[in-house]
Length: 363
Image (cartoon, rainbow, N blue to C red; front, side):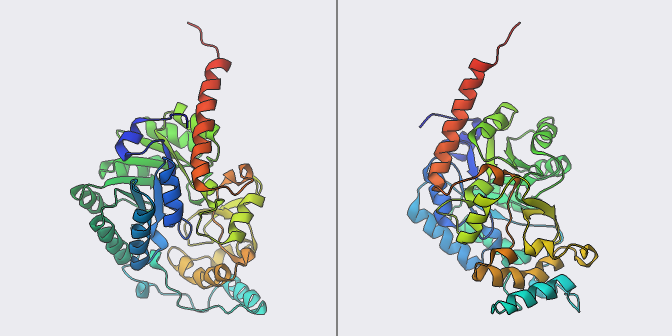
């Protein structure tokens, strides 16, 4: 395979600067190991895992790979200490009642009190301690990077990477001691801000004192090459890895990503009260005209999880939360994650090489 290295590769002890995003309910050990064994960085989506699941996935990864491992965790400032601290509205918003009724009409029961590990700050701190005890090399902070988390990771020899959606947030995580900043543009799936990837990258590179990784809307090697030329040290890629053999989500989710077009996504707080980019479906459409009933984080997350859980367990794509970025329009197959890392690397090298032949320079 062609060589594609940046200083980030030395920092993370990886072969190519392709970082598989730690997507919740998607990035389990098999996906992370496949990406890592192909030379990239494999990452577990730990936010949505229980403490026991984090433990078992770290152990599974170590059985499959001897490469470095990353774990994505969340530490939002306004997260409750525990689920019991969240007070839900009564009655529930009309769209929630409507979605529940539609699933029940399909013969699908909707259960209340579905466990949600992402909602508890205490759970995520316990996951962090477990990961550090097991020697996880990289901790990714997806929603906030507390100073105490960074200091604990550094004391235990772990590298910290922080995902941000604004230049202001980038300044804060750098001040808090993060080792790498991942800037995610509005094109990205999951939680995203309002600024495009290339603009946000340029803003942060203007003051960053640590390596900067580009994320958001990247699904081809040529885009990886473009990000590197623009100054990024690597690419953090999520949506492209959803449509892979090893992704831990439902087959209907993978097929929805492959079938989607460039205009199939929207950025909305309908999932958890924070702005998330996801595929349009019945789950999103039912809120049209009821935007005033949407709740702030984490209440919105808590009232939607029974619907999302029932739909996911029964592979009802219309009622699932299908987080995905605008890169869905560039995805048309379901290869292995290892093939994706190799393909992106080969395409990036080819794009960089071809650019030297296509673009003429003069004094």
